[in-house]
Length: 446
Ligand SMILES: NC(=O)c1ccc[n+]([C@@H]2O[C@H](COP(=O)([O-])OP(=O)(O)OC[C@H]3O[C@@H](n4cnc5c(N)ncnc54)[C@H](O)[C@@H]3O)[C@@H](O)[C@H]2O)c1
Ligand SMILES: O=c1ccn([C@@H]2O[C@H](COP(=O)(O)OP(=O)(O)O[C@H]3O[C@H](CO)[C@@H](O)[C@H](O)[C@H]3O)[C@@H](O)[C@H]2O)c(=O)[nH]1
Image 1: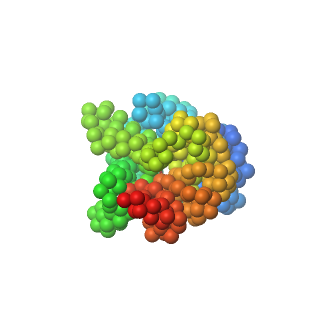
Image 2 (image 1 turned 90 degrees about the vertical axis):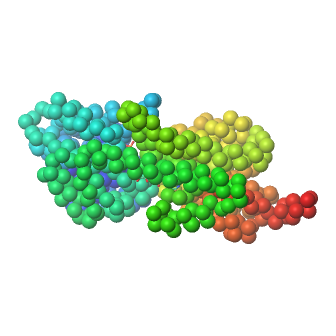
Image 3 (image 1 turned 135 degrees about the horizontal axis):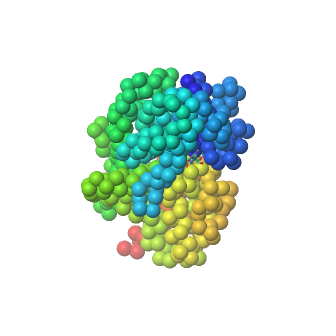
């Protein structure tokens, strides 16, 4: 099928590349000429494992094109996806300006019967607004159908998730359009769920709100576990064995970040308010997450009193491993707090440094070697569980520091493993580990 995708971000680009890989003729369109220029040269503007290779393969097969031109990109499309951003507006709601602009652009340039598919995450009812805008701006006598097709991929495993998703949701009021979409996705062999447009839009927000709730729940359990002497890793394992609870998304840490959970939970609170419903539960989830981002900072303050003049290494700046995305990363909150306390901050990330430089406060210094970050620091914080960070941090901290102190925001190590080293180790929801010598001194003083 002839497919066009508006927006070549994490969702649009991955969707476009994967659809071309299953044989569709795909054109990806973006208003950002720099991105399109890179893409035309076979370079991905984002870091996403496996993406660039798959892109190169399908460009070569002549079924994947890139353009900034609406007339070129939309003229012959049978299916047009809207995959532009829906960032958080000042009042917490989803900013729909990019989506509505894309809807106008589509209406002004299509020349045959088309299905417009909304992949962007949009508030319930938005597809009807898109329909209104499109019908107002149509230039040709063509039939347009509308489908809500929310996206569930995760950054860092976006290609893998697209090929191996657990469901594809197709919200439509037209059976023929829904069937055509099902046929388009058929080679993926992923179960298709056909729903109303409104339910499809709601499924996306409900899914993200539920996952965010799981994370805030386990983080609260972690905070209590520390007080009562339980171990959150054992608790998560123990509850996760219950099939009704499930063992995924129970990783305690320094909270969720990223381009989706923070903005989508806020948007759902706003949607609820507009329907005169007070979503108490989700408001608490958001509040818990905000304070959880500072947990390592609080622990370090408690341990050292003042952090002024201390140099803190932040290891892993992106909001999660295997991505260069800095949106709502915990490193932003933490570096602001540390700099405010007159601490020095040295940041390291295997992939996201260039993006980090654009969003972290002035004053943060950077290094492209984890060894340098640890060596130059007085205190080490693990913020993102990159493979390299897990593999090297414990050993490097012990190697370079006389009295090593490590604050681990992602519970990268088992306590048994840490006890083999002469290190003071603070993690989330578990007791602190102290070096054997310090432990002996403490015991002797009682
Ligand atoms: N990032 C994710 O993991 C993820 C997963 C599922 C759903 N979503 C949702 O998908 C949507 C896109 O997210 P993203 O992270 O890919 O966004 P992004 O910010 O990475 O990319 C958006 C792209 O759209 C382009 N754009 C904006 N207006 C345009 C227009 N009028 N015409 C053409 N291009 C335009 C921008 O230049 C940019 O390249 C959002 O609604 C998001 O909530 C994101
Ligand atoms: O047990 C867990 C799982 C995740 N996280 C954190 O939660 C955030 C989000 O992680 P993840 O969900 O893996 O990444 P995203 O790429 O943000 O993907 C989420 O947001 C996307 C955008 O809507 C959805 O499509 C995905 O289904 C949904 O998982 C990250 O900061 C993680 O560190 C935890 O703290 N504990």
